[in-house]
Structures are given as structure tokens and as C-alpha cells.
Length: 162
Length: 162
Image 1 (cartoon, chains in turn red, cyan):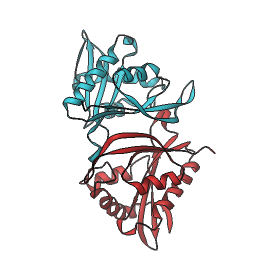
Image 2 (image 1 turned 120 degrees about the horizontal axis):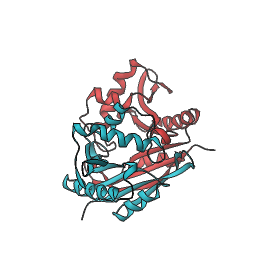
Image 3 (image 1 turned 30 degrees about the vertical axis):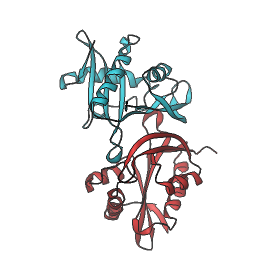
Image 4 (image 1 turned 90 degrees about the vertical axis):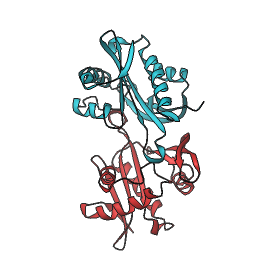
């Protein structure tokens, strides 16, 4: 598997993954009916570095890395990760997470923050904890899960200072 | 003092307050050199309700209220507050905060979340606590204060369910 910056030519594959991931509405606070245009504005916008993971010639995952805030908050990065539903359980999320931490360090960020990790997405919470993230806060009932109703959301944070 | 929704005619006054507040760079994670156009896009954008507080015929403060997330996160509101530097210490922030909580309830939000309360902004932290907000998480060193260096940032949350 190779992880690299995305190009214009990857847009269709990114949209395919994005659409499949948000359609279930159980992990991202994004309208499941978001248009392709708005999705790509969000995932491939200005100030956002977009990466893809490819296995052979197939794109199996994508992640974004960007400043979480502007001005005096721009030294903390934010990231988002999506794995193609057909390619789960193969360590693609972990590989992208490790790549992302390395890229964030390389770009000079001092920390990486996730603003919205849905608590019922247990495999994600566990993965980020294994990669060094801590739950720094829990937002009670901040996500409306399509089956489980209102569930908690974690804010997770990983210092990049060694 | 009266608090009401902003109109097009309030744009100049809003920009004047916005510019004065972000110029010091010590409370908001916004580029102190942000342009008028981008500032108004941020403060008066789509999906954002913009309010102003006026004392006599002078606009002395402004706040925004909007969903903090989309999709399954849209039942939690986010807000931001700015008081004209020349009108501080007169309870304008508190009046806008109370108005905002009332509006958020009226609009059906289940909670109000602040994503980025700089810990050194002690009067703001105290005010929000007095209005019922809890610090649900603290982001270590997430804000670069122009004089104090890297300081902590609080995520604050107030349930609107009675």
C-alpha cells in the first residue's frame, strides 16, 4: 500500500469513498445527502492537504490534514480519515493515521486534534488511543446516531512535541 | 440595551467591532489581518444567525448562533460573541449570552458548545460558567497568545434540556 498526496485525477475515487462513508450517517457529522461538489470542497479545499491510500491501482482510503483553527490556533492540526467500506479491517486506517502523524510533524504542527470522534465508533477511538491520542473531553449526546439515538462524542488530542 | 437580528445596514458596525476584537489576537483564533470580506463571510454567512446589541443608536456588541456541526451533529449549537472594546464592563457580553441561550432553546437546539475558549480570557470563562456552561475538555497549548505564549484552550458545553 502506498500513501500519497491526491491529484485532480483522484477526485472520482475520493467522492466514491466519501459518499459511501457519510451515507450511513453513523460516524461523521456530515449530511448523508451532501452533493459531490460540496463534499469535494470540504475534503479537497484550500488550506487542506488531501492524501489517498492506494493498494495496487485501487484507491482504498483518503485522509485530510489542515490547521484546526486560524491565527493563534494554526499550530494545531486537524485530520479526517475515510476507508472504503470494501477495504476495512486491513490496517488502512492505522497506516493513514501513522502517515498523518508523521506529515503533521514534518509540517511543523505542535499537536493533532480530532474535534468529533463519535463514541460508538469504538474501533476508531481505540486506534487513535493506540497511536497516542488522549480523550481530552466528551460532549454529552452531541451526535444523533441513526440507530442508537443521541450518543457521546470525544474530542481527542495528540501532542507532537517529543 | 436592545438585542436583535442584524441587517445589511449593520455590516459596517459589525466589521468595526470584529476588526477591533481580532486585531489584538489574544482571544480569537482568527488571523488579526483578516479582510472585511472574509470576516463578514464568517460572521454573517449562510446558516448563521447574526445578532447585534445596541445601546441607544450605537451598536456595542454582536454575536452569532449556528449549528456547530452538520448531519447528526446539527442539534448542538455554536456561538461567538464580540463586544466593542469601548463598551466593555457594562454587562453586554452577559446580556448577549443570556439572549443567545434563549434563542438556541427557541430554535430547538439541545446544547450550546464553544469549541475554543482561550483559558487566559478569564472573564469569558467565568461568565460562561455563571451562565451554566461546563468545561468539558482542555486543549493543552492550543492557542498562541501574543504575550503569554502557548496557553490552554477550553471546550465548553451547556445542555439546553431542562
